[in-house]
Length: 340
Image (cartoon, rainbow, N blue to C red):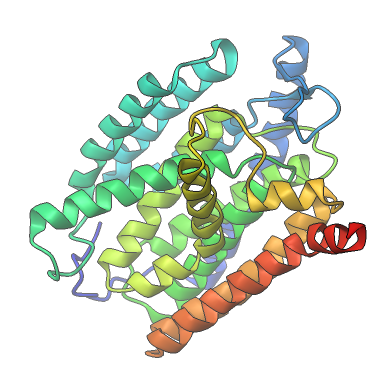
């Protein structure tokens, strides 16, 4: 569990053990995703295209079942003390599955998320390291965690992007845990996430044969948010901010724009930056690859932040996200200028 910011060294798995864990989670995820896809097809549990969809053919929705079936037992074996967090993630997955099957109003879903975050905060050390009073510290952590669950769900809108993001964050956390030490089981938890994410990404890459579904996006956002907050609590707050920075900027900027325009923020839409790039002519895999390249640069800046160059790393990460956004919106801007 957390060392509550003092970064006491606790030996993590060796490199060979981590590699074997990654391969085991990858193989299990690959196989289970195929089995779950077949089961979803047999029962007609499909995401059918509508006027706001980014896909053209009905696609099985619920691949998160397979990913979580790998990830939850792996995390439980790595760190049994996480069983309360895993149980809460499973509860969120059940709420998401109901939403996938029957549809669910925003408020019950939000209530479940608030409850899961509130209970999950007991597993976290203060995130700001004493900079804020404990009550404010936990309130801030809870709000950030709640937002991350929702933005992860919002951003799962095209083939490959959710798998790319979870894989990138997992690899970044693994590098930081192995390079600098003192993060306990973080490296093992992150490499298990990387393996499970890559296995799902094989099925979700364009053209997607399987979608994550709310059953996966809510629980996965919850688990990744927990890892990032725990990383921040260990003192690596800059790295925890840098790794998901594109997701944070896209989702937050889009929400702010829609709020300022007086739109219903709970209504489905296609106004995220990555969705606008798709509408401007980029393909699903082109967008996902651009996000992956940007995320690899963010991993490098996160490592730089842990090496002591936090201000430079934060500035570089911000510039990287701006360049990535410019790249994603460039086709749209070129088309608009050509029309003029």
